[in-house]
Image (tube, rainbow, N blue to C red; front, side):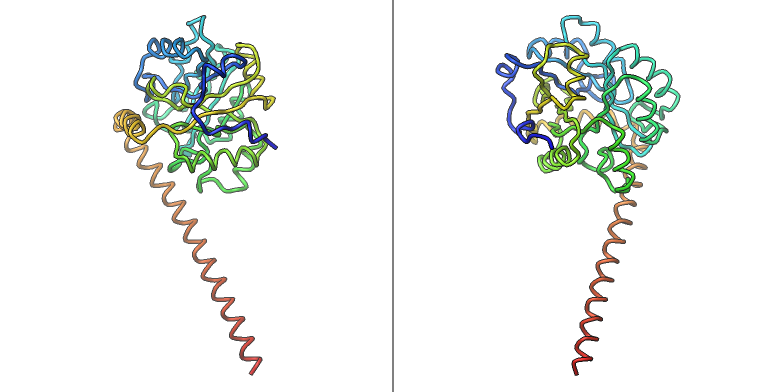
Length: 304
């Protein structure tokens, strides 16, 4: 089981953490997808905080490639892909050229109308294709609004169990998420006994470092990714306040307006799945209640 001290819901003391650990914000977005800031601005903030960064844009890698050019910064090449089901998955690469090859061969041919659209690849196929490279694969915000987290009713429990066996771990704290959703994600991390990560999911540099992943290792990409795989990482952070959430989501909304038809279709599909699931649950509850009352009446009748 995961040591509960490895997940801390509090504001990160970056100055203290950096004394003995390598500290990385493993989930951040640039203006190449739905983020607000340029990579240059992101790099300036990373230097100011003295941490590492993973630019994980949606179905896009230009930010990850650009930040890798800053040799004084620890950067983790990554991408946040959207499956055909509309669910997100984070893929981190040990080598930048592997990320580029993966993107050219396994993302671009399956892209939707826009980078924020779903790809045409089901979740299992994305994972299998990513496993052709040396990678760390994580489910971000497993519990969150609508369809973007893996813990949604679109996936059956049997299918989720199978998919969880294919990945390295889950993101247990996300600063953009609701507190209750992060608590549920942390509990999922405990129950799965998988690797754990955390990240701000920042769309502005003011969010950077609000949630970080850290490990007692030297500041090196391979060593840090190995620490994740070996379950040696810890996560600390908390959710951003409501006003910042509104500001951040406003940026995402503007970027997503042109992608509205795709978003609407996914929400509609997810909503139908939830309603159908709830309908079955209600019918089963009614059936159990009716059968229970029927047995009680039969019992009372025999007693007469």
